[in-house]
Length: 312
Image (cartoon, rainbow, N blue to C red; front, top):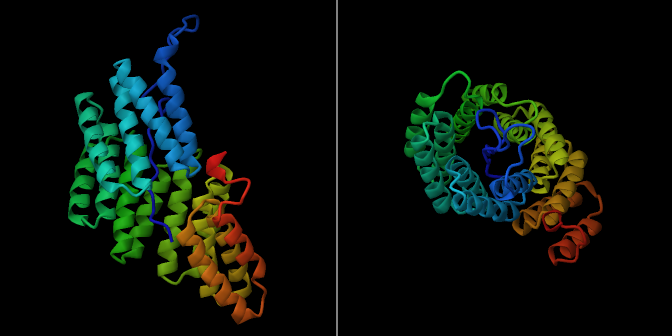
């Protein structure tokens, strides 16, 4: 199952940051809004799980921001670039960028942005198995938070939830996920999907399979709406595991098939093959056919699909 990505990008038009513009009749020079357009494109690709495409736009945005000396926007771009690098499996670069973003936010007197960058960096520390450093970053971030800093507070709560879950303290993890959910905006579908997925994993670890299934399916609905095929595959895989835990082999097989297809379209070869192995195992156990999943997974992984989501 997937490494839980704490998806907290910083949008240019989010609360507290504002947008370029000016008075209704004023026309902002195009070069001063070019970075915003690239950043927005990057955020759209990121929400779909297309991290390489997102990174290209975040890099372009940063270049345009520094060229125009838009320092606040450049700092936000660093945080978003770091998220993309982390998602692509480069924690070293991600950590360096989060650290630089935190310094930039400090220089600008932006405690909310600084806390968010530090919470995101704590996630990197967890990725590379340095929990004590993650804890220190989260404590520092927590101390910076004010009542209105909901996005940063959600990031802190969610990262603490991941830590608790890894320590097999699932009750604490679920309580922290609930805190994160309360601070996550209703229209933040990516953030909410990540939280529901995390709740599903914690419940699955507690053998609360029925409750876990509901969380995974809720995450699937949100990720499907976003067009995030990789996350959708993870949600389906979690749902399949929950059904299998409940002894529902046929239902589990159907979900494993769907997850295998989604992984192939997301071009995740290892996950597709691992999930296909489960398809074949359950197909043999239930006497159900698995010829078509094997044929299509092989076809899609060989690059013969017409509609890979991250290439469109």
